[in-house]
Image (cartoon, rainbow over all chains, first blue to last red; front, side):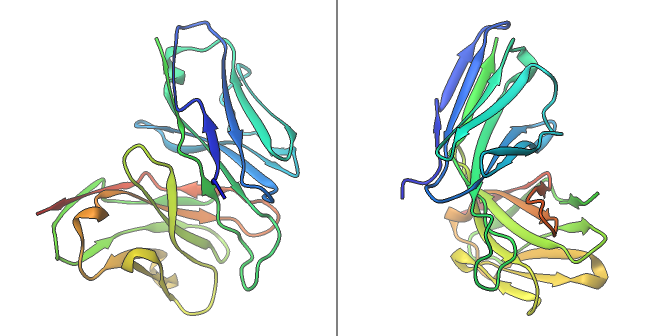
Length: 119
Length: 114
């Protein structure tokens, strides 16, 4: 398996522009997570989906951020309009929410991240 | 709400020396605990996890961690560090039940001297 795939790996944009980050989870995984990593705030969960349905979006910073998961193999995180304080590394992770043998909590597999710079 | 504290922002050790990275958690019930490693420019990779049972868990790359309920700790250890272990290490706690979120600590940056 190719693992979690994120695109683009790097994005530089100007303030006010729309930014779309993409994620392809591992095939067969039915939970998907979007995280943001900054020096100041560390690693924060923004939103997570289970079976393509958003379960908890309490970490989404404001209405400028939106996330969708139209099918089991694709998710987007959109920022519109972008601001310099949105500059961060955005990670997507996926897991299988079903129980594995002896394990009530399944590992999250992380993608390589998208480094976003908003000028 | 659960929280995770990694008191050491940066640790430097010599290659071959032993390593211990500290992690303290706050959670009302039995926690699910994890250690992840992040190499520069990479995503996070799971080193090991604790759910129940034996409080000493073995992970990949020669790492182990010990769950101590009385101290609310889950410290990561390695008897002999290799230069390739230089990375950032994150402790995380997960909630039981249907929620699958992880709460991460702020991370510990490990530098390995030759």
